Length: 111
Image (cartoon, rainbow, N blue to C red):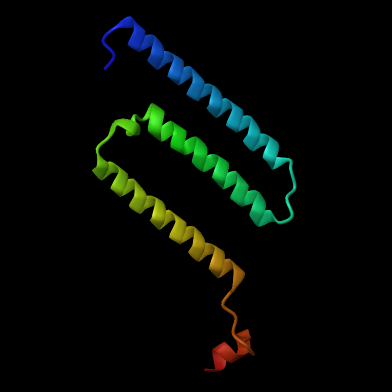
């Protein structure tokens, strides 16, 4: 915790800078929603990158995770890898849907 006035002012300055960065990246996010990239997937990917950066700033600074022990970072790393794997599974399943040849509603009923 800050004990003197100088540390408090330094901390407030840091919070104002991070808050300003979050506002700037929110404006960038809104601006990107009007930009049409070659594919819809690229729009989503760029939006997710900006959102991840903003969430990282909030977690590190406002939730004080930058002062935590290494166990917290290991748990967060596992969570991050798990989320990436889930995104990849969704991406792969969307790119290669499960389709059976010669399948229709009547053949399902007769078997």
